[in-house]
Image (cartoon, rainbow, N blue to C red; front, top):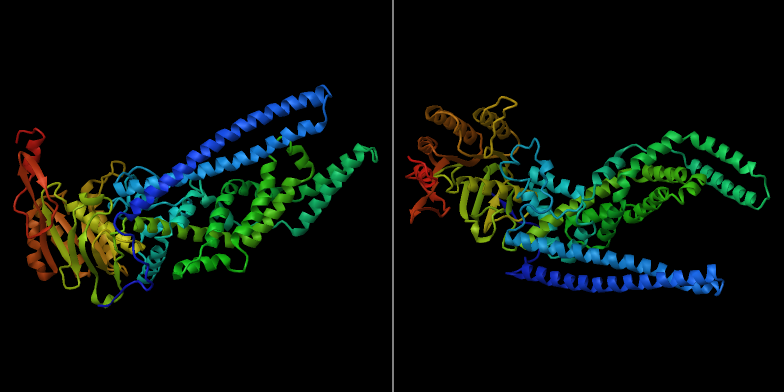
Length: 611
């Protein structure tokens, strides 16, 4: 069997407490910036009040008393306007500093195990997925919530796609290289994370849908026509005010103008309707792309993203600024003071033509830009995980399918359990080791957690992320799991029947192109011992015969006889517990062989049942 490590050295990971110390230093730096910004905010607020009062006093003297020249009013008035601009910039910097501080506070929360329930949880990605609930991939306290630092829907969707399905070996290695390059780029990842407001995830799906819609096909000459009509309107109104032309002439011209615009009224309305929602995120995407364009990269995946963006020699941020300018004219029509003037000058119609022309020229490219941003945000999420979990290595991917599936982990632990609370175990399947481990043990001893630890680390490995282990070597695997099977009152399905349906789907997955990793928790627990033994024996034999590897947990010690029939292809392992001073104690260490006792009666007595 051949194993290839990643082709580009991702650089050494941070050592020891370096991530924690770096985050603490950045939090302190941003706290100083926030304090300085608050002082500036207070100073400018007071100056604005003073200049406003001065302007009011000067205005009274100039306009009501005629006791001073206009300059006396203009100086404080212009000063007030200048302070408005400066104040807006100060508030913007203050908000950015606050977002940057929260970014690193959340990083420390992730390292301290206090991240659960904070930030987006990706619950919407769970539906209709074969094992997302089994492995806690999405939802509160999920793998997605631990990993995601994405600030756009495109980034969240890309990361979710990577967690929901394994990539091939070439793709995984490319992601590993990119994650390794992004891992030390804290400034770049910070910029990506704080460009969007903390309380807002960029709704880039609306922009993506708009990009894929066909343009309305407004002709280029319509822009020239509308501009000419608007210029004529402005000129005639000006001449009417100077009594150079009769007032009826501009009115007749406006009627003619309305008739010309009416030819494309439907198309103009559709353009404006479909851009109004996505327009909110054009500024965000522009800022993200502008930052991405500036960053040099060396790994193949990141240089490819960069090259896709700059294709054609025009930076996408520059193209988006053009669109942003056109959309801003539409936004200006919401101003009640400008709206009548804008209507007379056909601002909406002119903007619609230019937006539609932009759409026709750049719609397909916009979809590609969104995909690039989504991919970069997903890689940045994995890079943050790699930086904060410096002790976690990248797995080694095997690329020789002739030798069958393989999962070889040293000191494997659950990635969602923080620090030393996660007990590590060695787990080896395939490649000369047993294909299946029959895991017995008492309630709460760690059997299900072991299965989830194996499954979650496979998800991380085949997404391109580091894994929670001292070392992991594996081949590409398809996952099938029955850790969280539920009945359905509405569908009239019992838990046992739901489990049977799930197992049937797993058997079908085993016939697919990838070898199967099966994780069967308390297999067939909803039926009697006789039927369970026969059914479990047949199911496990079928999965093993089909080349699958996996783990099966059980309370039924009759099932631990299965390795005798499968020989070296199966082995028994177990978890133990003990009673210390009236309390049940678990060490969560996997041991060879079959468990020798059960704690069910002790648990019932511990909660006060008389058994």
